[in-house]
Image (cartoon, rainbow, N blue to C red; front, side, top):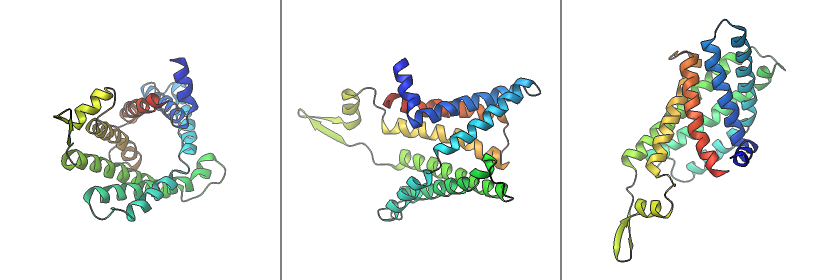
Length: 224
């Protein structure tokens, strides 16, 4: 367990999830102890960790735009799933770029008067990206291709059943998509709160962040 935890926090993704978990727990406790010295300290912890996590995704726009270009050259416009994935990648890329433009301001290095406007646009694209991702996962669940039966030893078996027999711990595509939907619905509350579109408060947002962080950390934990 200790060795696996060490491998987990040494990986970039695992360390980012660890910092995110501390951040959202600090946010919840600070909201529950508002007015106290502890709340002030934990709010500082939350803000500093939120800033440090931005470094992990600074170049996130590269993967997003590369994926967008790949979709444009493949099937981005030929299917509903392709269109949703294309929209998701585009919005994530724009979110990363706009957020990066305000990093020096957030670090206190170079203040700019347009910080709030740009961050509002960034969070808007973040919300749209998550919404398109949820829509894509729902579309795949409802209208995705059915698993084809395979013939083995003269008998037909469902591909899913064969896969689970070989590797019982391997998640099915449906369960992965359901997990994705839950995670991204939780994360959608963050930009909704930041934009003031659906204020829910720090306790609710922080609690849903804990859930989404633990769910995504499970996959990283299993891989290290």
